[in-house]
Length: 363
Image 1 (cartoon, rainbow, N blue to C red):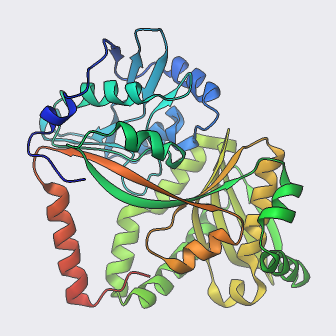
Image 2 (cartoon, rainbow, N blue to C red; image 1 turned 180 degrees about the horizontal axis):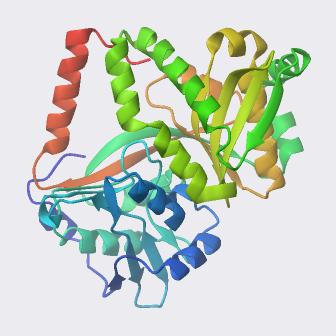
């Protein structure tokens, strides 16, 4: 889809339903919808909005919609702090903050999305982006008017239906099961934490991973570290652990009493693996990261989760193959963008230029 100089014209091709809008959204109603929408993710919750706002850059701009038939929808949304609304960027969710998009008291409909878009386009903003739950990719694509930019994305999702025995025997690849057994025989020990106690060890592995990623991508290490601190400072993970409590689980693998690998999983109605880090010298030979996912998936099954989201895979074939070895299915979806000026095109152009100058290689 291509950008439209006048997105209002394209979106107004849809008949805007008479909806009642409340912003910020009522937290009690929001929590009710989280319980009703069995596909909902922690990153769509009011607690996640609190994490984003506590980071200091955003304020709550969530919108609650009551449809003519009484159904309710909520769009988790934030905007940049300290900037007039007409010059601000809105996001559901910002980069590196996971999936946003609508949650609903009943299954989402095309008219719901059309009504929300018709409301949003008439609000003051410089740029507004929505990265919906990838499970709703089809209905968003069908409802999206031609005036919106649709940026293609790829995610992977593991269906947990049938429980862990079904997932283990029918969805895990045989070589994945073998690697998990190898990790168990190698003496890898695993623990998980819901208090934030393991954040420092997790972040230590994150910094080691940055060094490895920088080499793979031919990126100057100083630049890689600066980007990582800007996107994911340790304070971010401390805030997430503090605000979310038991919904934030850090799974840590140890080899010879040393931290070898860790994953961060957000879990409520569904589980979402959102970060993975490791010391390749310790985790590689022992396959510790395979054991971590096995245990996190098993815990999600026991908690009654329907899906284990494995996050964005981008253009990385190796990352996609790793996720698919656990039975995760690739899901093509899109992030939708409305903007008054072509800021996205400019940003992409600048990034490509910088990558070309430094010889950056997307890993």
